[in-house]
Image 1: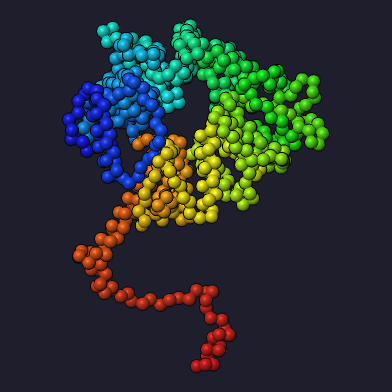
Image 2: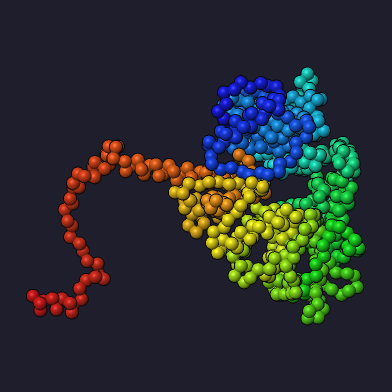
Length: 616
């Protein structure tokens, strides 16, 4: 990751001219190393206090900051919302962002480096509105940390936080009864991590949460953007807790994702943290969850709610949509972060066994959650129903394309031969286009639904057009310099077959592992190059995105070139023959022939022996 830069660096902020020169030099160096380049037309405008700070570190600190595969550096950058670059050759840490972002990133880096020599000392000026301090009983510290810190790291990854045990005041010494756990991040991330730690502590030290309950509930009160942040509680009985938790916590997670609130169970207490609207939704969803144990549920006034979508399901398709032991419905809930259940209006008869006429629907399916998740789940259900009852949702449907800037849905109708090609094996082509475009793409019969914001829908439509053009021949893509979702890679002619693989198998493998859409295309001059499309730009250490796909392509090109060099060296007349080739010219030692025995199956039959004797 180091770069060749012999200029002396100052630990102070660079002015605009120095930063501009450095960008030009780094750009020229990157062009020499690789012929690939990423096109970005419009970048977000930087704030007035955007700048660059540098920090001189030691070799040991550099290894600690970088982490395994660069993951620690990436985590610090995500939590601080800053750009961090480590120049290993000069041992310089470069931090880019606003004043607050740079301050937080520097603070996090210093905290990570301090862990190398012992406990981190946290002073009063550490809190920039991004810190939660939690007392953890000494007997639960090892349990919370996990083996080699794995449990703490998993919490960090889940809630996008940075966590470590620390000393608050060196002069007072460490309290033997408790350890202080520092949690850095957003208000939502800190609360999610804090409640998850408390849930683990409560299993190890029952009753501890009751002692600090008031302190936890009052923390960060009204400090979110809406000014309504708070925490509500609900008490469970033993049999209720297991139902509200679900298999491997699945029920709790889907209520959390669909409501937008932080939902966690500490002992027998359910805690709902978030804005007023998020907490209200979480408690309503929990109420409807338990109502299903008693009978059919009906959401009164659902037409006036903005968090619910209701879909009429034909009676003969209810079991197909639900799946065995609710497996199909549960899978859609997990995929789209929604809460889904069938509801029946009181007094209407209804019920899953009620068939109201041949063409009547059996029940209404309620889909609760954010708009994007609801639409994705709704289209998935429509696709399933269409397989069972063709024409249910597509009869009379026409193509539709709108210029709605907000969230909307466009429609595209496929021909018979186009559908299977655009779907791919087990839906792999559809999934990769959806992931790369950032748009919801679902096929309901022969109708392709594109759901998302205007740029997402347009991008998905372009991807589908290029995909279908590949069936007829070479694709030409111009004006990529005006796009911010593509990386262009020039592949040497003798490496193109190696990179694409047999019938594009290598490209498909790289697409699947990086979440991108890749194909060879011509430019306006008729020159062929590889285009990597994705809304995720990726980073140097990420495993997904355009940067990851570009690394895989460059690695394949280098492997091919090295292999060609080795073969050309072995054929070169200037080099002497290798020992193995010299030995090959010496006559091989002959073995004495051994008599071959015939297997019983190949022994001559009596008739053949008689004919042979007559010949003799």
